Image 1 (cartoon, rainbow, N blue to C red):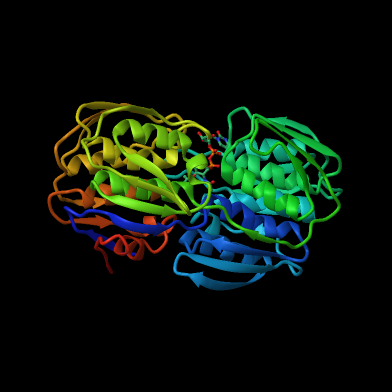
Image 2: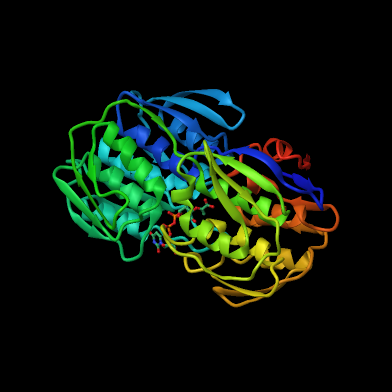
Length: 424
Ligand code: EPU
């Protein structure tokens, strides 16, 4: 697909952004629909390419669904899950989106069998799924890797267990938590992810009748139940989208009102660092307001699991630090290959040197415009940010990466008085 985004330079982002529902909460919660025989009714679902991919996958498994567009930035989805009759998640869908692995736990625990294509690597890292597999085995499944697929069987159902994650994994925690909801007995998951999206999934599952405690802490305990039922659930706000637009205000010396729930708590590590750079955050009735008036100070950032600094805001933060008055250090501790945007930012005049996980960013007065290439979702937004602050107009190639995680970007920027155009 040839799709470019033309970003006009020297713009100021001033206005209000309605933050959409969190992609990384919507994806596991849509998969959780498979756990109940009588469906699930979700609202505040973000209209994103990744959500469409998950819906296509669910449809392939036998789920039918009705989407309703409630607003430009949000939709409701009603899942009907009583005729799921296919337990194979095929390569042609999984290769588009690694989060497809999230159907493994629900299918296995409800139907006792499934085959999910191995996702393979991706641009930000190797991204193995060994913890997902070891966890399912600990729950009593027989797992075989054959023909590029994970074949998992548990004819007599899964059994409660104790499983400790060697490294914290977000989707690993979500997959095992979902699998354990219908297992026989109690499961204790240790060293789990504490991300707000994991907590949102646990809250939705508990409303469906699951018995989960400890979500948001290091240990989650799940007591299996016989079945789950349909509920209505609204997806939490997307903290990464909110952080990305906060930086848009910072990098253009503008001011944005970010409308969304719980943003100050979910972004606390980010807000602390951004405040050191010089952004000013204040509470407003439905969210937070961010502005930047003075010069940008250099700082050091190190990505970490929640509640640490999110890796999903690292690329965008780097664009901002390129314009700080001095030298900043960025350490990427989650993904082994998440500095691909460095080469593109350098084409816009940035002064960055880097090794595997450490980037040294020396501030420059201004970006210059250039044609650049988006490499992954978050890096793409980082390039948009640099382009907004650049001296001229820039063309960002492979703009489709953005649509995986940022919905209606042209409309959202336009409400802030900013012009970005899609060129097809
Ligand atoms: N890991 C393993 N084995 C596993 C699972 C993970 O070695 O079985 C390693 C990974 O290689 C990585 C670390 O553990 O080094 C953490 O990976 P994690 O499993 O937490 O990542 P994920 O669940 O695949 C989610 C988000 C990512 C986000 C990461 C980290 C979703 C759908 N995706 O990925 O979001 O970067 O957590 O916070 O929730 C994005 O939205 O742009 C995005 C990439």
